[in-house]
Image (cartoon, rainbow over all chains, first blue to last red):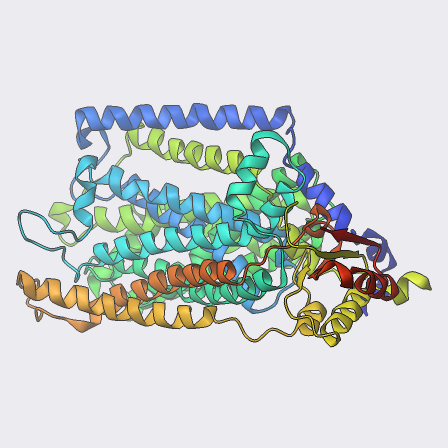
Length: 450
Length: 167
């Protein structure tokens, strides 16, 4: 066994009782840092909500839209948050199917991030349409105009893909949580006990319950895996199905999926570092986990870097003057700074992760993850805004500058996301109790006697 | 707890619990309940259930979703015919996306329905102890009072850390 070669690990392996104790302890009273974080998130959320109300009152004119750029910060942020969401399902479903043991300590965080990131992303198309109260027109429902939605439009595919993703990832999260919440229920008092009783659905861990549960979980994972690949492909087709130079390429679906998982992994690192400190989970989430995440970041980051290179190569090789000028404009036009931010943050900075020292250094990982988040937001900005601003005829070219409303709503989306995330982290186990136990063998009589 | 009469044993060691499960099965008991804090293959094997029928719910849910996706898009396209971009009214390729998403949505939801339904149908009234969600394996065997002493003896011999007689 590998464990014998590393005696310090053997003593570090927690027992079942310690796992329950340590993880249930995170549900107690978080420190002052937590309240400061929650307060700041709520403040930022209030600013964003204020800006949104202002936009609803005065109309979309207050956002920075300038023809031909009619997709701006909101769609950029939508794609950004949908992208963030992808890592959760990767860690929880795909690594589950691959029987990867290290996922157990980090997957709950990734899943929670997924659910709240989709919840955040889903707001943006609604904010973007301006007349938010007509959002229900997106749903095919019998109406007095007797007209149905246009199923040939990628935008409608998006409605179906993102809604399905929100529902399925929420279900996946809640089902995965049942045994842990039951464990917390058995140790809780007061209103929390009532809450956990409700959420755990009478779970007792009986043989019959496990039998059905494990099968259901396996099939949910098997469904979530193609779903996660489809969602960002569909999002990419919002662009690729049109004929805008810079958008109309077949590489978009794999390129977006890799980018999405990449940004999501970075966000998981961003969230795990403070979480593990605040809830004293150093014993469960340690350098090995960060190293594994770093390896995944490295590989997806290199796929993204490769996609950038291919995009430029094909723009040149196609001989299409519109494509060529669009890509020339990206690198050296008005928005050169956005393009270079994206290239440096996404394609070059993560190459530092080739070094084991950096992969295992938590401050370095945290810093790199922040840059990747920044770079991935700019990637979407470059794809969306820069391509649109340089559409077809020079006569129609325009320049888009986001207004303060755009920035405030973008910031507010972080407030919204972190408010939910922090509230969840305080009230539900952020590390899976049952699954961490599952990878540790239960004690045996024979061993106990020797 | 107002469960049926029987004997509840708590185990700390997985091999002891497995021995006890085998012995209980040997005596002909079938309606016993085993509690584990985490899924455990040895215990699974000893209990020896058939494969859960939840997978059929997944299959039929997925197929229903796929059919519903194509049916909805095609019917709606012909119900109010509007030609978009010169494409045929019922264009299968774009509808594949909708059918795919609905396959997953309805397949996943029906899996959950199957999980709830079968867990509910196979539930049993049995004594429970909060330690079973922590670090103990529990076995509850419902039995009339005259058999309690024999079961108690069996559990103690296989290495239970605690045996409780209920009712």
